[in-house]
Image (cartoon, rainbow, N blue to C red):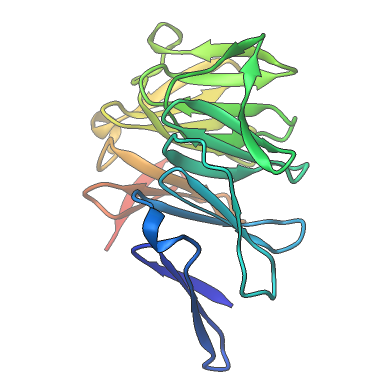
Length: 231
């Protein structure tokens, strides 16, 4: 199946021309906000959020489990290598446990900054991209921060990627494209030929080519040190 969304309704489509739609909220409590969907690697169920609502649709079923609201807008859903769900919200990091979202406490303190990007690296560390406070690495419940003083071009992080060499690429709002490699940050911008500095999405294909989603220039391809806009 493939899935699409319209407002707060989820549609599914199959190669058999079989289409269905599902609505997972009470009409009296219609949610507002961006709709996010990820598929669980563990059981192929769908995790779905819109506004501050979180729901799960089991694979092969037409019903939803709607979980208690946290009253915080959810910006990103992320499943780690242990198949545990994390949510970046307007008020910090939340972890799904015991059928509910609980605010994750780091060194016994809640991380209350807005979170727009999440990444797990090959060593199992969680990278947290915040809106305004920079980049954080969570390693064994110890938090390390990267910001302007460490070389970041912006503290407003909106996309993250680990490439096949182990470098962390960082897309931001109002900055440049940053690359963290061996504890050193290198900045790429329009001065180095990058068509645009606003990088909203990052991915790498099997051949090692980096692909960037931008605000105004569509998709950008980075190969052998050269940038190319795909139109």
